[in-house]
Amino acid sequence: MIKIVNMQSIHTHQVAELEKLCFSDPWSENSIAGELDNPLSLWLVALDGDAVAGYVGSQSVLGESDMMNIAVHPDCRRQGVAEALIAELVRQLKARENHCLTLEVRASNAAAIKLYEKLSFAQIGRRPNYYRNPKEDALILRKEWQL
Ligand SMILES: CC(C)(COP(=O)(O)OP(=O)(O)OC[C@H]1O[C@@H](n2cnc3c(N)ncnc32)[C@H](O)[C@@H]1OP(=O)(O)O)[C@@H](O)C(=O)NCCC(=O)NCCS
Image (cartoon, rainbow, N blue to C red; front, side):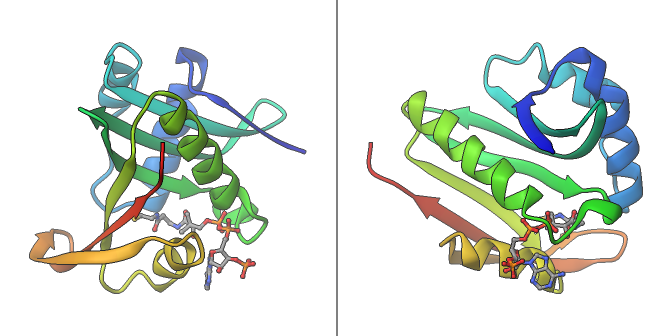
């Protein structure tokens, strides 16, 4: 059974391994560990026993939050893990008086775009050539809620 908890230092190695597996331009383990000391950051992990099945990272400033990244291990996809991570992230961001969550997604990332559509994120913009490896536009999506 999957349990969503706040990321701790025991998780950062596995999160970094998942970053490498899922992204062409991954965050380093040091950068991920640094998020634990950043008062603006909130990162969650989905645990299957001791194994990190997925994670989501965010930073918030003046009531507005940005999702830095989200990934689920290929063996654990399509089981609602990402949906559960985002639901818990929004719950905790709301409790900290943040009122919206913004993210960038590669224009070709159909799975992630479907996920965000399901969770009522709306497109608010597009950044041409935002990504490298390979170069690609980013769609900017946002979800807002009442406090
Ligand atoms: C995108 C990602 C995080 C989704 O994780 P997940 O745990 O498999 O997603 P969930 O099981 O919670 O899916 C929730 C909904 O998202 C949509 N969805 C997720 N994966 C999908 C896919 N491959 N194709 C179509 N829709 C998909 C569906 O609407 C799904 O609901 P449903 O299963 O009831 O149809 C995962 O595919 C991943 O890690 N991808 C690589 C990293 C990445 O691209 N991250 C996003 C960066 S912006």
